[in-house]
Length: 152
Image 1 (spheres, helix red, strand yellow):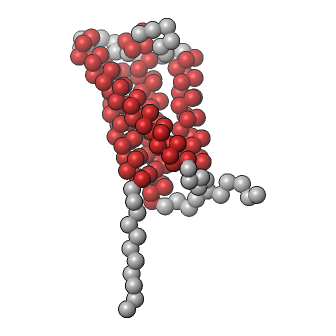
Image 2: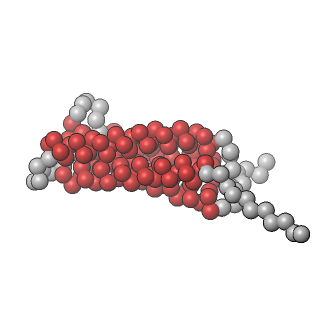
Image 3: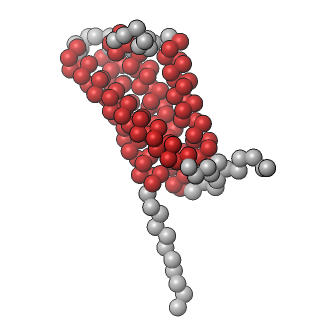
């Protein structure tokens, strides 16, 4: 057995890889920004900035993104559907993070509060993550148009 022979980089597979990495960065940034907002004080299991819980959440997220991505890059076909499931979960998380950040700014927002910048960062990373996840679906499942030219 030769091991993992990764697929040749087509523009679609390269796009899926790039958008997956963008989504991963946005998700990790959302965890960091959320830990700096009042969301970190909502319960005993909330991640506060710099805590072991925050770092373990980031490591867990990176593994959830990287392991399937490596399998995808190695040409394992069914992994795309597992990645789609993770993408759906990430999409729901991004929308929830954006909603939480916007509500936090509207309800508790005073211009001089310490958490205004992190809440704006959370909203921005969540919106970018939402866009990245939607683009991921388009790139991963778009039907390719094969052009056949017949010689007469």
